[in-house]
Every structure is written in structure tokens, then in C-alpha cells.
Length: 557
Image (tube, rainbow, N blue to C red; front, side):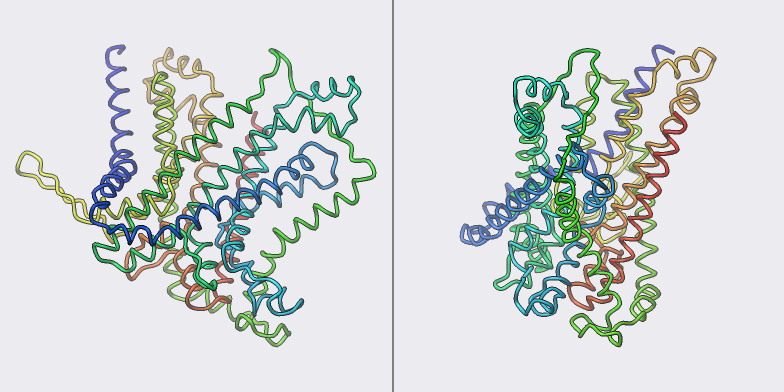
């Protein structure tokens, strides 16, 4: 038995690593190799013409990171370190942008701040606000990334020892001075790390830059939208330029991850051995009411107004019509939700999301188990599983298109031939979804498995159970809440995904993401608002299921 165990583990590692290398990491390597080869065939003048898209990407991403940091840093202190009233409700509302696709926030702000038809401009005067252009894109992307900074600050604040503030108070510092001098510097690296992730998220975005950039005057193009335009143009020259631009976008990923890692190391707080953390909330005193009103106003403007605008647009007969009772109707809902193409796209999206969610859970659990068995290789296994999540969706989609644009043939023993035909099929979408969100299953499974005592499985083995039976009987039941959470998160992400779907969806068929993109970009914003509301309801339902699962898990413990 001891001789078989290492062999079976190595076979398991190969069975897990093979598909990941072939379908996720290999295509990206092919893309980079193709890009190096394409550099000689693309004129220098053509590449220099794309410098505007590269500079716009950097500028917009930096602006989004600055906005998220400027709002998220003080909010994290107010919500997680003070006695601000309703801070729990505010925390839920401010983290909502991470669950709802950024494309929907962009739609909401188009309804609010479109120069002519936006609700705010109708009330305050035409042209008061203009959401189109680089500033509007950075604003919406920063809003979508705000939870990354907010939650990073919350995690850092929980690790800071309150005794540091008490020591500052003993030395004569005021409460505010003690907070700013002792706590804020220790949380700053984590806040900056969250801002770097916002930068990477904004650089990888496609939907928001498209709907807010193409219609701007002059049009604002970024790397992701240029890649999309070049793929639509077709031809060897356009495809070669798209490959080079995708590789340039890919280079930003390791740079951002390295910055996040460096900031994380510099911001690591170590507590004395055996010493717990008992947070003492900072009293706002007379400032409670004005600060509550301020935070409530910011929440209303950033979160509630755009969602309300999307809901209101869904009841309009046509976007931009005068707001009267006669202009509101329920026909949009019945007309959109029960259309044949909507039902077909819904069924296709749900099936793909279901399949991707199951793959994420199975492969993520396998990754966690392999990390435990191969402790020396654990960091490498986790990095391979998590890495595709950091790759921009546009880059991953282009890589899959390049790698599987032609049928792959495998001949076994000169007699049996296997043909892998993935181009222009829904299987390509399934692969992209599973690869992109594998990190959700890996992280959830790894964290849950680390909390389970290995002696449980060992006890089952002593009782005569085999390795597989021991795992099913002992650790697996305790892993179900984490796997359920990973499934729900992956399901929601895949069902509402837009970036990869737009590039990979087969001709003549649609998923919910591409249908929403088409309705908003080319057809009917009011109909798109109906579908966006359905997206929001789906996300809220998923979040409610996650909350219920967490409560049951705590009750079991």
C-alpha cells in the first residue's frame, strides 16, 4: 500500500495538471510565441498607431485605482474601526459592486449622466454631466473595484493590535492622532495592494470601456476594445496586431501581481504569540450624525442611484422619453424575458455556468488535495491554478482562439484518430469559464481543507477504508459548505460573464452576456435594462444563498 500511494499521487497530479496546461496555460504560451513571431510581420507604423490605446489603458486604470483608494481608504476606517451607525448595512451596500458586473454599473451611469438623455442632465440641464470618455470609464471602473480596497482595508484593520493605539494615547496623543499615527500606517500597504488590483481589473475590462468609450467624442479606445475591433476586422494583419496588443496587456499582469505581493509583505502585521485581537471601536462623538449622513449620501450616489436608474429605464417605452406615467410600461419585461432568443440564451448560459461551476469545484478540490499531498510543490500547484484568474479575459479568449482555431488531430498506434474541434462551439466557452474561475474553487477548498485535521482521514484508514473511501467519509462532508460557496460564485460569474463571451460565442447563438451587450450597444437600452435587472436579481439570490450557507456552517460548528 505504501508503494502504491506515491504512484497514485503522481498519477493524480498528472491527471490534474494535463488539462490545465493544455487548455489554460498552453494557449497563453502559444499567444506569447505567436506575438514574438508577429512582431516582424507588423509594420512599426501600425504598432505606433496603437500607442494611444496603450496610454489610455494606463491612464484610465490609474484613475480607477486612485478613485477606489480615495473612497475606499476612509470608508474602511469608518465602517470597520468606528462606531458609525448602520455600518453593517453600509458595508453590504458598498461591497455590492463586486458582485454585480461592471457593465451594469456602466449602463446605470449612462441612464444617469448621458449628455442628452440622462436623468441627472434632464433635471440639472443638458450637458451638466457627461459619462462618456476616459474620465467616465475610470469613474465606473473605480466604483466596480471599490470593494477590493474596502475589504483589503477591513482585513488589515482586523490584524492591527489595538494596544498600539493605547500606547500612543499613553504618550499623550489624542484619539484621532493615535489612530492616524498607529493604525493607518499599518493598513496603508493593504489598501495600496487593493488599489493595485483595481488597476489590473480596470486594465482588463472590456464592457465598460466599450459602451463608454466608443460613443465618446472623440472615441476613447483601450487595449481590450482595440483587440475586439481587430478581431472583428479579420485578416492576418489585423489578427497579428490583436495578438501583439494582447501580449502587451498580458505584461501588466505579472507587474501588478508583483506589486501586490511586495505591498502585502511590507504590510504584514505580526502579533505577539498567544495574543488575540480585541478591536475597540473609535467613538465619533458629535461627528456621528454628519458622518452618517455623508456616508449615506456617498452610498446613495455611487450604489443606489445607478441601480435605480437601470430599474427606471427598464419601465420606459424608449430610452430618453419624457418621464411621465404614460411613458412607463411593463411591456418591456414581458417582451424581453419571454422572447425566444432570451429563453435560448438563458438556457445556454445556465447550462454553461452549471458545467463550469462543477468543473471549478472538482478541479479546485483536486488542487487542494494535491497541495496537501505534495507540500513542497504546494505553492507551485496553487500558482498554476490561480494564475488564469489574473490573466485578462480578453487575453485568455484570444489565446484560446489562436490555439484552437484549427482542429487538432491525435493518432494512436497509427490506427485510432482523435479529432479535437473546439472552434466555434460552446465547448470553448465552457473551457474559458472553468479556466478563468478555477481560482475560486482552489482557494475555497484549500482554506477549508487546511482547517480539517488529517487525523480524521487517518482514523478512517485505520478502520479499513481505502484512500478514496476515507476521504469521502471524513473530510468531504466538512468541505461541502466551501464547495457550495465556490460553486455559487463560479456559477454567478459565468452566467453574467461578458468579456470572453463576446469573443468566443459561436455564430448564430448567444448567451446572456452577449445578449445584454448587443441590446445595450446596438439595439434597445430599455430592453437591455430589463435584462440587467434580471442579472441583479440573480446575483442577489446567489448572495442570499451564500449567506444562508455560511450561517448553517457556523451553526454546525
